[in-house]
Image (cartoon, helix red, strand yellow):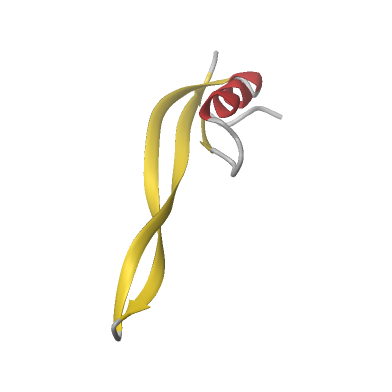
Length: 66
């Protein structure tokens, strides 16, 4: 079975970015793009709903090494 030409790899909680890059390389891919998405939590203060950033999700887009 052949691998996909593009794959997305998410940095798992507790994993360093270097460890994720090593995992990408071990899978036979190389990173081409890094994106970060904020994760928000809903908090109610003084009767108003506020969305506060609490974490971030890092995702690498990778291409297959030929």
